[in-house]
Image (tube, rainbow, N blue to C red):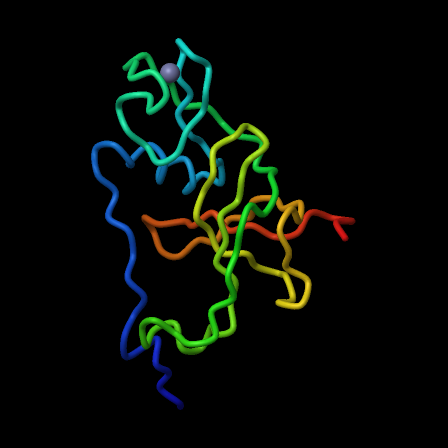
Length: 144
Ligand SMILES: [Zn+2]
């Protein structure tokens, strides 16, 4: 049996807190939910109790479409942490959802030669353990 780098040094995982727990709980149920301000109607990321556009605390969680496009990206060729050594090369991107918010994510199921700005993408869910599921994004079916 071969011991891999990721077994020696597991990947760091997020720690849900008061503000982010609903986000992570929804991902566990394979639902991408962000907060939307009920006063100015804008959705936003990252989770927080005040709307970043108008400072209202009248915000509600809402399921997003899971569709968007690549706003910007980079291809990681050198792992920033030993646990990511087996993943390189991989794509880190900022995806702009159709609803407006931008999320830092990994792009999966995508050749690095194919990644480009404006590529239409959709959410997929990666169950990591009992508590954590990640939202990843892949090219939409039929996207060039
Ligand atoms: Zn607002």
